Image (tube, rainbow over all chains, first blue to last red; front, side, top):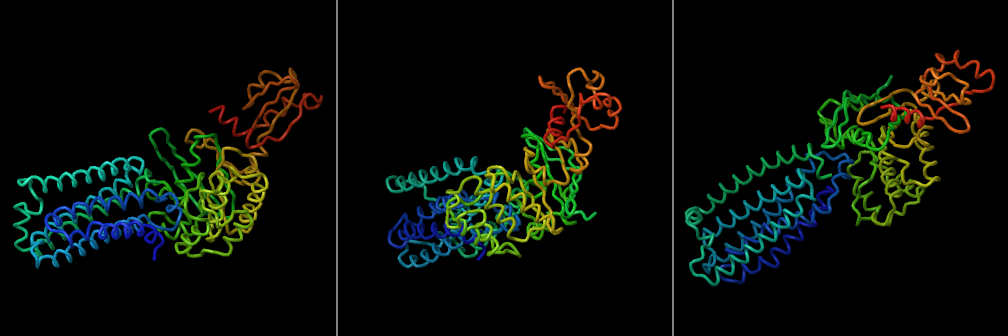
Length: 215
Length: 290
């Protein structure tokens, strides 16, 4: 296995295990609003994994090796995509399992895909940001994002529990509409996300090659 | 002349510093020294030459190729030792060897461990436990263990003790002597490195102020030591550097033949004598005069 991939994958695999172990199990055992809330924590876990991986990364050292920027960018983007894809697969599998007792609905599949697609793009943006501005600039930005994401998710959970009229993202009109054909909608959303993701990867390649802030 | 590296009109700008119009040619099997005071642009130049900092394509050619299209191949042939080497601080020296080995086409693991042994760097130590000099030696061991044909070393002797510095200089001389390896070293001090550098580039304020073969400089540049009043003021004005001292003055010149006739009487009477100048003396005259 590529040494850069091996070193960085430790953080992403750990994040996936802890996410599915700590949060994902609630989707198996809890009722509403488990499928509304748990996916919202995915970006937090993803960005935390990236933060841990990038905080300890030594790009100046890597640049002295015969490793092209293209290879590094591809490795990092593969990790983000693999993490999100694995989480998406696991959440979709759990959702399918719980459709029998009506805890999950077809629109849940679309909602999970939407959240995963958003996480994918946010993760890619932060990764490009790290290459462009360096960890010293991005660390506080990402730290505030993670903390903010957690706080907003908790506020959302609390309001869903105590306020009957609090809007649920997974039951918004557009999500319900897309849930009319959940697999087609998920495929289209996934394809769009991957298209944008590929664009960000190309941008990341240019940014990493031109910037010295991350070294 | 078999050229290993060629940089043409290299310009690199940062917010507070610019490297301007630097051109450089490095011969195969030579040791080139890039000297200059702090903030002259030596590190920036070396970073660009080793593809650690981006410049427009084609400005730097190494072994006839450009990094933009042959980065993997060229980095297998170039060993770069930065001024402050970076490693994963919580990992051991041996871990780093295992990490880099798959990337280099000609990685010599046994050679790397032999070098570590001769440098007295414990492979089981974590990098954060190494001193600055040991990190430098680790970086050097890595650069020397993948069969690099061009070594680009930024302040290679900084932080090294006298014993290691001497053995490093001998090692570089031996490497270049076989004709297969080429060495570029940068330093703000010429002590030691001036002994091995065959071609010299002086940088000051981001510009090349002098480029010459070391032997030529040594032949051309001389100190004239003389008693106060033994030389005319007109001669003193022609010195690149003039130092008046209580025990006698001395002037540095790069044009001794032109002065020889005027200095001849003082030389004949023993009131003046000619002495060698060091690279540092020459460098200082350029820095002060710039």
